Image 1 (spheres, rainbow, N blue to C red):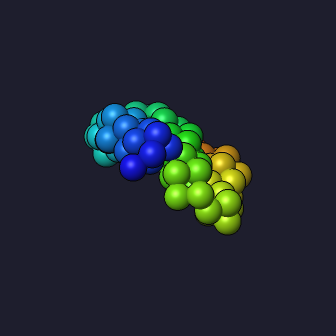
Image 2 (image 1 turned 135 degrees about the vertical axis):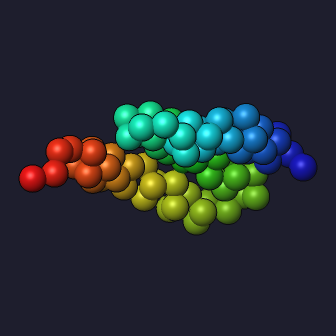
Length: 84
């Protein structure tokens, strides 16, 4: 196990765990905060994992996730709005 895999394990446990707990509880705004917290942590985790296993092709997934995070946030906030 190299330093990149250790860093990805730390990000997974200490970063993504609390973000998922925040995203699973409370009202819509707190769930949005959990989503916004989990997305960059997941991107960093996937990038550290790709560096740890020395597979540059694995970097496609975090890059796509970083772009789709913006779209997911817009959709989530649209669904939080009042319904006619």
